[in-house]
Amino acid sequence: MMSTATAPKKRQPQLDGLRALALVFVLIHHFGGPFLNHLNLGPFGVRFFFVVSGFLITRILLKTRDQVDAGTVAWGSAVLNFQARRLTRTLPIYWLCLLLAAALGIPPVRESLLWTLTFLTNFYISHIGYFPATISHFWTLAVQEQFYFFWPFFILLLPRSWLRPGLAALMLIPLIFRYWCITTEASYLVRWFNLLGNLDTFAMGAVLAFVSLKQPGLIEQRTTRLWTGGIALGAVLVALYLRSLPADQPITIFIELLESASMGWLIACSVTGFHGAIGRALSWSPLTYLGQISYGIYIYHVLISILLKPVFDHFGFGGLDTAAIAVRFGVLTGVAIVVAHLSWEYIEQPIFKFRERFSR
Image (cartoon, rainbow, N blue to C red):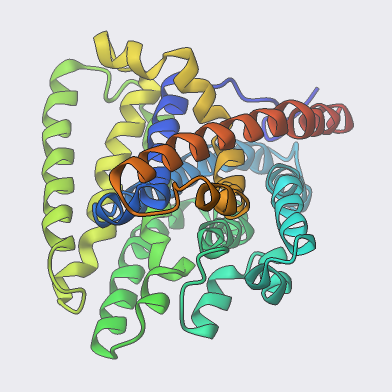
């Protein structure tokens, strides 16, 4: 029998729908031209993916912790199994994209290849002191993998009585770190693009995992959803206001925490199930499939935009006018979806199936 840590998980369609919407925010940020880029939707999408990661990974590890405490699984085997499953999910198409870009001679990829292949892109960006567009989106994958590396030790080895205080500390430490960055005038690359500056986002997802396992029906009641939804809406509105302030204002250290709290509410509602029109919209099969292949779209979309740039320039769609931006957005998004679909069918799915056979 396969353990909880290795058993295939049932997909949650509404959560996939939210993943798709978060991905659209990222695509608008990257493909939407100067005006849409100023809306700063990309960070919201990335923040959502971080909260989801904290939530799903913590749920898996908490169930594994039960087995470790019961003596049915050794913690060392549990950690190795977890890391193997994560790497077989993230590495294959990520390395494929990087090596293809390097083979095509894209300079920033070649120059940073050792950093990017080892999920150190965020450190590379801080090292060089600027944001190279061709690899910049990989900082999020670096932060996630760094989180995946240490989180099993936190959940599996920390005494149970320390888990809740530990999570509270992980909420507090990033606030102190971001305040330190402001007072020392550290670069925004140091403040925002590393694990320590985003740890409260992952921790928010982890708190949600704890609550959902203890009280799975907590947010199903209509009245509970309404008043918690009001708090979530207030949190995101305050975060939007704080984003309008100069980044050196100390109050801005709460932006990430407030955004994460609002996204945690969305995730909790999607897991227990939105009702009515919202539930049907988030469960719409094209949207949920987009969420299912969202990792591939995120991996490939920047490389696709680089390869198609000469084509757009040749046909007169390389400018910043509205028509050119709209054409580029439609074509790039469509091509990214097709490429991610092919990747899902012929690379990712076969790897998953082999992994499950190997686990058995």
